[in-house]
Length: 410
Image 1 (cartoon, rainbow, N blue to C red):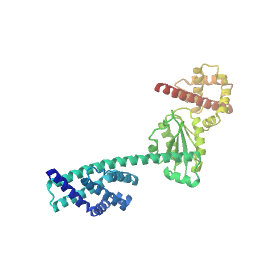
Image 2: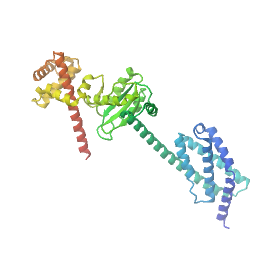
Image 3: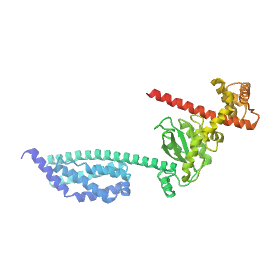
């Protein structure tokens, strides 16, 4: 028998002796892992850990007996199981290091006790290192795949629960289960947010909105639909947090945003969504956030689009014969006057013109519409018509922008 054959025979004999110590080794390693890595003791059933240790040990030394043995199954199972149990990958690598130290010690002891030739011990050690390197690669790949699958599954579950809440399809016990899964409290106040998206599959608010709101103690969950992105937010301190939410939405939205009124029971989410969508239609432009009940005029302008459009055209009919730019100037001036409490001086500062210019434009508006700004009822009519018209213009601008983006992409 040649030297190489003798080395191989010696390595197989050593592997056979090591396999006889499988239970001894598995008991010791399982105890050490549980003692040194608390998360294992907390989350991994001891019988499962003992079985995993034994399977790894057997595969290592069975591989010395049969070099063609595919020994990846224990590492694959370990990676998937530890990910499912929530054991951090760093802890799994630490467990592998503990097992490696024990195997090395057992191998060295056995080689010394049985007076194994150095070349035989080296052959066994080389096979051991190759197998362990393969173990960690397989384990980490399986861990990451399992973790990614679970994250996708959790995201899909959250999305489905939000959808069911929005559609009002959950019974009361299921509502509480959904609240737990979405990490929302069982009791409000809540609001529903509807943010217009630029196109299907695109977000209406910044991707970091959930984390940003969480820093303000506002828990939220989000669902992307084809036309809007829907958010469900908990506001335990609405007096302080509603304005914080509005500011965050104004800063982080790509389009118009509507917010429902506060409500206390999650079973009312579908109704709140309807009100949020109405508020969205009353929003005048990108970054503009309308809260149902706060901006009543905008909401009223959006609540019955067909009727309101006819009413607005009737009230503003005298402006239709004007050049579009002149018409826009009169309405913009009226809007600035409204926004500044009917003050021509403040409106002028906003528009960077002389106050007399503002007064002149407002008189032209009165002449063209046949309504006077000294009559509160007629001011209300003009205000409603103005909000409807502003919403229409904003929608046209958004639609043209989306068509332009689509043309550019093609």
